[in-house]
Amino acid sequence: MTVDTAETRTGLLVEDRLAIDAGAADRLFLEARTASAFSDEPVTDEDLRAVYELTRLGPTMMNNQPLRITWVRSPEAREELVGLMAAGNQEKTRTAPAVAVLSYDTEWHEHFATFFPHAPERRAMFESDAQARAGIGRDNAWMQAGYFVLAARAVGLAAGPMGGFDAAGVDARFNAGTSRRAFLVVAVGRPAEDPRHPRLPRLGAEVATETV
Image (cartoon, rainbow, N blue to C red; front, top):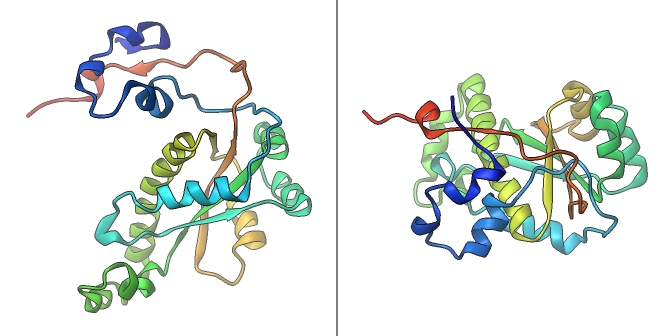
């Protein structure tokens, strides 16, 4: 099995195929890292708004946009969230300049007139099957989570997604009385100068892709 590592970056077959400049490709993909440690530089509300404004532009099924973001900003809310995280994620959650709880809206179809104004009547297709609606919301929100990470990178931040947390507890604290369901917590900030470890290996194309 072959893998691509940071050391083999110059051998990747992408530089001569880029439609964006090399600096943008580095920031979004080639040099970007998942962050576990951050600098002390604060993240502003304007930074976070920019992350969302970019995230919302990525495509989803029928433009349904089920992702909901809760920015956990107050010290009290942050400590409550820390207590709901797995042990290995608690310090990252406590010390990151910003933290987002990503949730999906199980009732995303209620906004059909806004996100699909040319055919709002299609809302009826999803009214009777709550299970299918929740699955569609979850799957498309996961796709939007990928856009979220790239959006953070695009505005000069780094993201550290975390799946280890008490989802029911997070919903009880941050999504109570709503149709939102938490699926990911993301630490956001400007990365520390020294990553904790080298970039981990990626699967090669011969393992992960095929042509039929």
